[in-house]
Every structure is written in structure tokens, then in C-alpha cells.
Image (cartoon, rainbow, N blue to C red; front, top):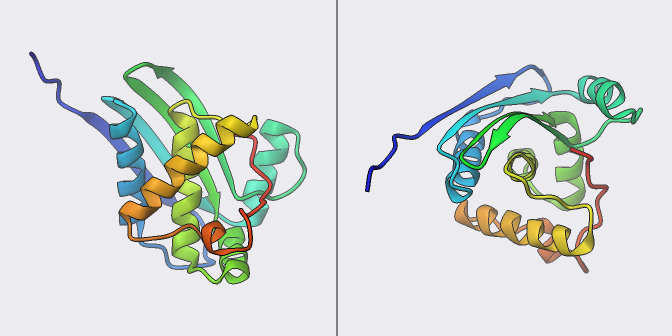
Length: 164
């Protein structure tokens, strides 16, 4: 059996001034999603932006004129390779973290995991798909020692799912 060397590049572009963000856990989360999806080659960029920037992207690319938490864009993909972009709003993460009693860094981690799962083909349009995606989010968050805030809330958190 020939083992192929992994060629996964994950760039974090911090384009906001809302919070100081440690990129290491974000990069680790994307790497974990890629490994578990058997993605050997990847070029993933993660952009940390404010609400104004994500609103503009949401309007331009999805015709939704509002800020959202996370957007993901697959630029190219095959069974073992993916090139894509994840865009997360640090401003939304800060607001949602305060709402749920979480740290903004943990909320950002959730958004990046969610976006990365979309890049490897997971969807959340239907209830069954959404449940499967939530299970994956829960498992990956647990690997960081985190329990999803929707687990501790009364019932599962109902958040508007981004169209990514």
C-alpha cells in the first residue's frame, strides 16, 4: 500500500478588529474535518471578518441582505481534494457567545467547524442532514473539550442556518 503525503494548506486571514483571535484551534478544527473526510489535498482559506463584510458577501453571492454567522464556498472538489473558503463573522460570534454564555473563541470554533463540514459535502437543508451535521459538530467540539451550548440550553438551539 502506497501512502500519499497529505497536502492540506489552511490559511487564516484575520480581517477584523473586533477581537484578538488565536488561529491555531481554528486551523486544527479544519484539519480534523479534512482528515476525517479522507481529504488528502486541500487549500482552505478561513476569513475572520466583521458583520458588514459578511453581510456584503451574503448579499453579493447569495442574495441575502443580512449579516450571518458563517458562509462557505467550495471552489473546487473531488473525493480526495477540496479547495474552498470559509468566512466567519467575529462580530456575530461575540454577540452569540454572550447570548449563550460561551466565549467568542468557542463560538468562532463552532462556525469554522460548520463551514468546514459544508466544504467536505455535509449539508443541513433537511432535518436528517442537519441532525447528522450537528452530531459531527458535537464530536469535533468534544475533541476540544467543549460541550455545545445548545446541549445545555432548554432544547436544541434554533439558529438560522447559513446557506453555504
